[in-house]
Image (cartoon, rainbow, N blue to C red; front, side, top):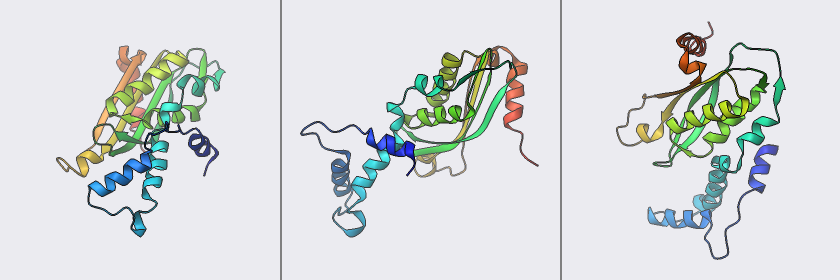
Length: 204
């Protein structure tokens, strides 16, 4: 267990007196679908499910300002900064099924840059909430634009949704692509094209 995971689990909210825990509710769900939660393989499942769900939604307890402001550096640099292929896992708010893929982020700094790992942490923060891909893309872009004040921000997410793969239309190879462009990334086609070109470059 990492230090960050331990911090998240220690920060778990405690249920009010008389309020059922997620584990207790999950036990009832197992009964409703025709399972026996007392059988060997399921005895610990409700507690494990609660622990997993709290981790996967831990982004609600995080603040983007605190996450980014501690890693801002004054640097004389005004070219594009790109962090691509950030692995992303989230839960679709419509069916509570996962969607996963990659996030590409770029910005053009004015007076300050942010530590590269913080961009990945910001993606994780918003992904660890119940989401739709369109809102997730916009939230990442707006947070960077608000807290770093760059000339512009570009965010592209490419993801596969298990609500489409496992159920519904059952299209196993479908992929959703969303983008958010702010500032010069929206206003300048050249800037936008440079970003899109960079994220689609692959190693030989």
